Length: 130
Image (cartoon, rainbow, N blue to C red; front, side):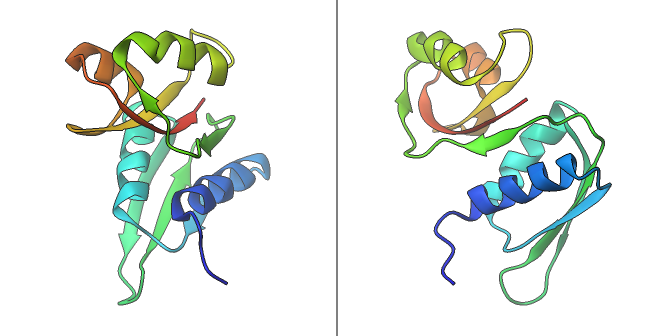
């Protein structure tokens, strides 16, 4: 079976494990985009530690869950978003303005929408988590 979206598979397995009340989840295959997305989630304390396992193939990631994540997902296709359009995207995708983050890929790397707003840089929407 060919993986169409590695990031989508990873985020779905995290959500499913979180709903089932698991403490850890194994994500395979790994990719640089998945690792960067997980770093953004970790920075906002939605997940615990995660470690990369190099199996000389595509790699695996073991993520420690802390029970804070409600939902995360991929936005496909990756829509272009300017800084002025962030508020519209946030209101369309996130349940509330108080919590949750959109993850964008910008020319300065992968970051959440608040960091992108501070740096005043737009980009393509990768996904969201709350």
